[in-house]
Amino acid sequence: MYRDDTKVIRIGNRMIGGGNPILIQSMCNTKTEDVEATVAQILKLEAAGCDIIRVAVPTMEAAAAIRRIKRQIHIPIVADIHFDYRLAIAAIESGADKIRINPGNIGAKERVQAVVEKAREYGVPIRVGVNSGSLEKDLIAKYGGVTAEAIVESAKKQVAMIEEFGYDNLVVSIKSSDVMMCVKAHELLAKECRYPLHVGITESGTLLSGNIKSSVGLGIILYEGIGDTIRVSLTGDPLEEIKSAKLILKALKLRTGGIEVVSCPTCGRTQIDLIGLANQVENMVADLDMNIKVAVMGCVVNGPGEAREADIGIAGGIGEGLLIKKGEVLRKVPEKELLTALREELLKMQKEQE
Image 1 (tube, rainbow, N blue to C red):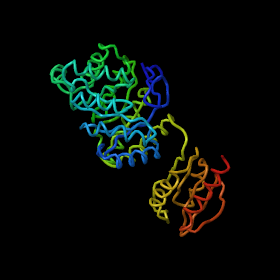
Image 2: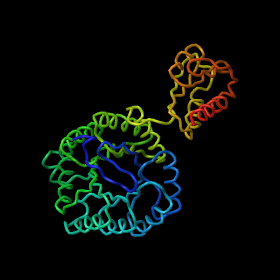
Image 3: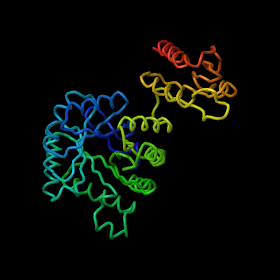
Image 4: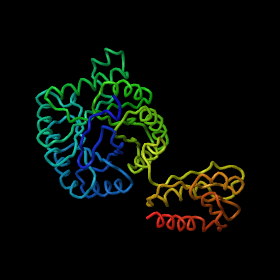
């Protein structure tokens, strides 16, 4: 069972599963108890393209803060719960749009049932989260270590526990920092899981290694038609997670819209600061809502030809560059004015599209 066939689940004002668009998630790294800082970060993430946000709920104060946070944001908020079932109940009562738990960590079945009954009362979905780093000892012994099969069996066992209480408003997440193990686990689970899957490579690392591992893992899983929401887990600013997730979805043709920036690798012909220029262009276009491709090329030898498939672009020369639109050279521009000239032309194009 793959993406188009999964159960449709409502999370706040968003719908996932059943072929709905894949949504991007992230998690705040602020203290949830600090409402002002958490709201400020969520609003930035919203502006960057975050669809669903998760916050840590380690204390009753954090659970209570959800109510005040929710009043000031515009996307669904998910409460991340570990161990204490009372925090899950409190978070639901405070307005969490979804809760994330591992039923195996909650304790006695009566405690899991109490969480399920509160979720049922408020119509809140439960995300069943299983991590390779916290598998049950009996499963590790059964499979001779942490394996994809063990991860899947753990997830199925946790889901079955909640289903016993007659609740199927569920999202499932299975994660591992081992990319290929994570891929295999999703391939196994997707064949028999009717619930939407939240996909990610957990603890994937820093900006460099995390992006590579997430791109490889998510790329394979999403290309196979698996996954309803995604998170690129990075050690760093959550805003980077959103940027990366959007690029992964766009590269797979699973999301359109927004400006795509392409740039050539540097070589001995490069006469301008191409690396700096490409980064500046990427930041400059972040606030523009157009479905176009912008090329940043390093020289005037191949630049115009390479930029032909882009809607607009610039190609550098010695102290100057070419402004190119639809493969045609518009004019030469001094290097220090290239960015401004490109911005002005983009604003004209945006106005024409409105």
